[in-house]
Amino acid sequence: MFDALSDRFEGIFTKLRGKGRLTEADIDEAMREIRLALLEADVNVRVVKDFIGRVKADLVDQDLNKALRPDQQVIKAVHTELVNTLGGETLRITYAPKPPTVVLMAGLQGSGKTTTSAKLARWFKSQGRNPMLVGADLQRPAAVEQLRTLGNQVQVPVFSEPTDPVTVCANALAEAKRLGRDIVILDTAGRLAIDAELMAQVREISEVTKPHYTFLVIDSMTGQDAVTTAEAFHETLALDAVILTKLDGDARGGAALSVKEVVGRPIAFASTGEKLKDFDLFHPDRLAGRILGMGDVLTLIEKAEEVFEKDKAEEAASKLLEGQFTLEDFLEQMRQVRKMGSMGSLLKMMPGVSKEMRDVEIDDRDINRIEAIILSMTPAERQRPDIIDKSRRARIANGCGMDPADVDALVKQFSEMQRLMKRMGGFGSKKIKPARGAKGKGKKGPGGGRPGGGRTTAKGPRMPQLPPDLAGGLALPGLEEGGLPGFPPQ
Image (cartoon, rainbow, N blue to C red; front, side, top):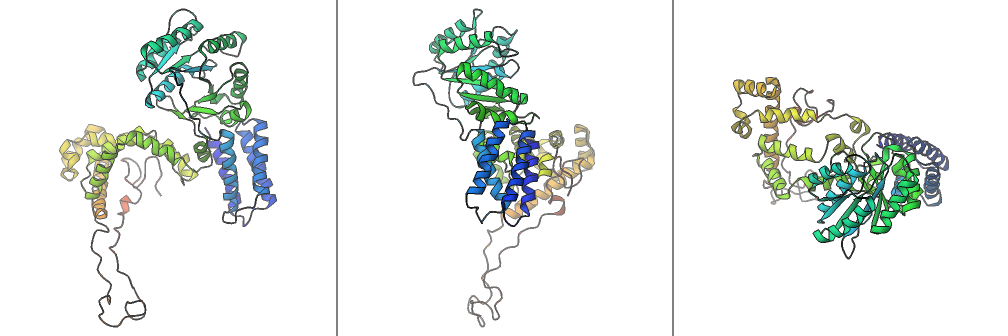
């Protein structure tokens, strides 16, 4: 979503990189370009004005850090204000001392409210809670059935009855107490536009259930209309926070950068995909880092922790360094990485990745080709790729619909990687011989070594060099030799 804004920021910072020092004229020019970048991203005009004012004041009024380059000084100031504009700190969810904790979900039709309710229920389950979903949207056809289907997917019970929305919500609280459910998520009805009937109904539900949290679900693709909607709902319901959906879309992102400043309520959660697991707490500092091209290491680590088991990861690393890492192990590790998300999304979280690398379209189907080749092998061939001869290569290629040359390339590169890792596994474990002259033989120089200076410390083992065909990583069959998935060869 923020790719265009990130590109604009990168261009602005690149211009400052060649400056020796940051002058007031440089600051004014940078602020003009940042203002245009934010307006093009559909950020609210008032928010842009306040944002620029704070950044400029931070750069002009304070003593500039001489240890930082001009571009780093501006990046630091912009990052600080981006974090503040997006909400400052991550919202901490607290729970009612006497269960259940009631969460009311409001929003316009089409904002993804029902799906978001199920995603929120799944998130609460991951926190060790026992949520219950309530289908209070009795106007939209099949809305309750949709919620039941989603509830089955996340294994959360759904309560609803053919009465009226207010009665459904009131009875749901009693049912939750009976079942011992400590979270109740009320999925209320949406409308195509804000109207009096909608507001009156949601207000009545709020008065009856007294929710601990009232979340407004906003489609971030709607731009400034999303901010207008948030203001209208806030006047009626006194919102606690906002949930943004479709942050993985191709909109300009103005809603995310505007809603906190305009409405005065933080963004609590963000939905970053269609799958129910693509949902988490909104972290202003992490998003600000991604907008400025700094990556998002913490989210990357959290995704890895969800997928990888520590013991298995250590076992795989040990096998790799001992030269016992097989194609079976490689296939398993590759599948684990894919559970973390698409290769493109993971790449954007890595710090230091160039714009060219981030903009490359990585087709995850390329990885399927490696998987297909490995799955076409017998268990013995995966354990010992060296037994794959010409006839076996032909059989494997026929089984996966690839060329025998693709199979041969994968096997050769994997074998080279095995040998290299085995050599690296012993690196540093050999005893280091003492330097010549260390035992008193011959004359010593001032440093205790040989005359005339020379080496005074022991020469360590030589680091094994990467073979040419592995310098660019394990190539995918059918791609240029030495290339990574979706990347052109260097």
